[in-house]
Image (cartoon, rainbow over all chains, first blue to last red):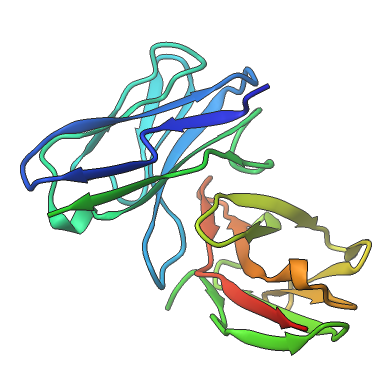
Length: 113
Length: 109
């Protein structure tokens, strides 16, 4: 099993550009989520999904969209990148939900200039 | 006040030392508690869950004090490979995971 994979590993964007961060898992997990990690702060939840076709907002959803068309994939879209979105983004999955072990992808380091 | 607070450190200890980290949480209705380990520029990985009765996994011991709303992680006989950031994570009654900012441990030879 590959576990949770994320692409790209690194990305530099200019302000106003859009892009999609890819996330996939091969563990048949129902619950998937996106976090951002900034220096001096804990991981903060952006969006999450409890199953295909169901998504919801987390703590910091502004500027981001998600969709979940399959159990395996959970892409995160930045609509119009801003310097405040410079961060490390982690995708995570778990079998049933947030109360259980989360499996994280390797992360995407995004810089917005 | 942050929902989950940790002393960011860094804690610099020699090999073989015992070191303890504390974490406090503000929501008394929090339900589940975890310690995750994050190596530099890597993803977090579950180190251990924290149970009400306390639990041990080799050199690692986790304790929960619901009355004072804190959890702790004790590492005995520290190894160089224990150098990492340790994240305190709380599952609250809002249905979300709340992450502390992490405590950095550096074990020196």
